[in-house]
Amino acid sequence: SRHDSDMLARIYHDKNEHGYKITSQKMFGVEVAIMTDVIKYLNDKGIYVLYVYDALLCEEKDFNLVAKTMNRIILKHGIITCIKI
Image 1 (tube, rainbow, N blue to C red):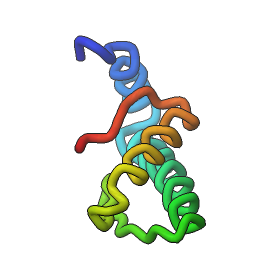
Image 2 (cartoon, one colour):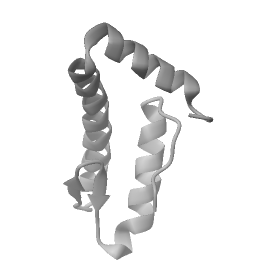
Image 3 (cartoon, helix red, strand yellow):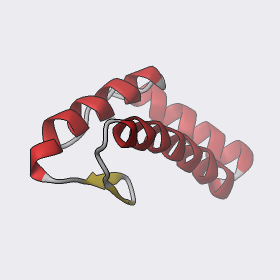
Image 4 (cartoon, one colour):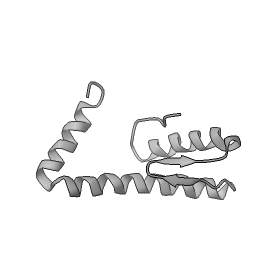
């Protein structure tokens, strides 16, 4: 809440206006769009991952490329964050 108070306020407002189910659907839609772009890019490079909730599992040898790809594509979607390692 110290770093993302504006984002949290917008989520709270959306939940109040539309209900938590609609807000959750919107947020899940963004997650799916991001992960779809990441997985498509990695598959084009011959890297196949397992998508589990909001994480990707990969072979250790592919880890750096997967992490860089996720961080790059997340930014393309306008989300300022980085993956947890």
